[in-house]
Amino acid sequence: MKVRMARIIPISLAPATALAAVPETGIGLIVPPPLSLYVHFPWCVRKCPYCDFNSHEVSGSIPEQDYLAALIADLESALPQVWGRRVSSLFIGGGTPSLLSAQAVDALLAALRARLTLVPEAEITLEANPGTVEAAKFAGFRSAGVNRVSLGIQSLNDAHLAALGRIHSADEARRAIALALENFANVNLDLMYALPGQTLEQARRDLEAALSFAPQHLSAYHLTLEPNTPFHHAPPALPDDELSADMQEMIEETLSAAGYQHYETSAFALPGRRAQHNLNYWNFGDYLGIGAGAHGKLSSHQGIVRESRRRGPRDYLRGDFLQERHSVSVGELPFEFMMNALRLTEGFPGRLFEERTGLPLATISGTLLEAQSRGLLTMDAGRIAPTKQGQRFLNDLLQMFL
Image (cartoon, rainbow, N blue to C red; front, side, top):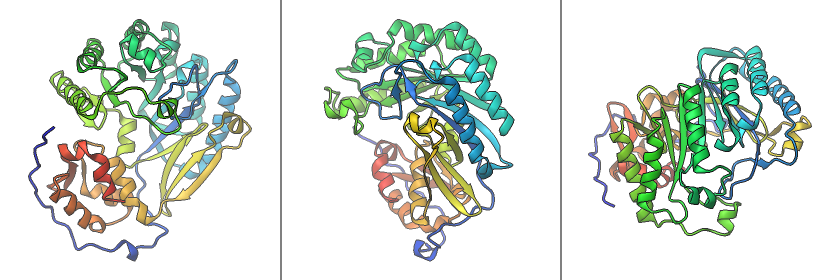
C-alpha cells in the first residue's frame, strides 16, 4: 500500500534540554488536567477467546449489592486524591456492565454524585452486550442518568460472531441497536474487522449494516491476538496484512463518505459526538479508576501517579482494593504522553505537552524533528500530528519516544 509522504514544515523549537537535567521524581503540575471517572464491572456471561480484559465468567449469581458497597468504599478511600476537582465524564466498563440491574446502576450513580461533583453536562457511558439487554433495562439505565451507551456488536454476521465466541446473534445485535437508539441520543457501536475467514466484502457488509442504523459513534477495531488468550495459544486463520490494510482503508473511506469524522485511531463520530471520556484519555487527562482491575492516572503539584486495583473480584470484595501505586518518572513522561496523544488523527497543540507533563517541549525536540524527517509527523502552527504514514505505523512512531 502506497502512502504519500507528508510535506515537512518545521515548527520553532527551543534548544533541547536533556532529560537528565530534570529531577527524576517528576515535575509537579500547576493546574491539574480534566478529571474523569472509570468504574469497572468484572463479570461477563462467557469469556471471549480474544479478550484480555479483566473479565470473569459468572458462576451462579452476581454479588451485585456487595460489589456496589465495595465500589463505594473504594471511591471513599481515594477521595483525598481528588478533593475539590470536578468530574467531566464517567464510563462504566467491563466485563459486561449491562448485567447489572437498572436499580443497581441508579444506586451507583446516586452514590457517586453524593461524593463527587459531576459537571452538569457530564457524559455518562455504560457498556452493554446485545445478549444482556432488553427494553425495560435500557429505559431504566436512562432514568438512572446514563446518557450514552456503547454496544459491543463486533459483527453482524452469525458465522463471525460464533468464531469470536460471542453469546449474541446478528438478529439480537440488530434488536439491541434499535432499542439503544430508541432510548439514548448518543450510541456507540463497537465493530471488529480482520476476523477469522473474513473477506473484504463481508467486512463491507458488516459496516454497511451498522451504518444503516445511523449511530452517533462507531469504533472499528482490528482483531489482534493478545497474549494469554485462547486465540493467542491456538491462533485462528486471519486475513493477511494486505487484506487487513484494505479493510481498514475501506472502513475509513466508507465512514468519511457517510459524514463520520475519523478523530482517533479506531474511533469515528458524527460532528459533535466524539467520545468525551476517551478524548480525555488521549489528551493525557486524569482519571480515577475504581473496581476490580481498574487503572487510574492522577496529577498533582507533586507529579503524576498511576494506580491499579486488585484484579480478582474475591480480593476486591474483601476490601483489598489497591494493587499498585507508582510515580511516573520524567523519563517515562514523553512516551506516556505520546502513546495517548498520537492516537488522535488531528494531533495536539505543542503547549498541551507542557501543560500535561510539566516538561518543556524542547526536551523531545530532537525526536520530533527526526519523526518529521521520516514522514511520520507534521508540525505546523504549533500543532503536532501523525501523518497518514504515522497513523499506519503508529507503533514505530511511538517507539521513537521510548
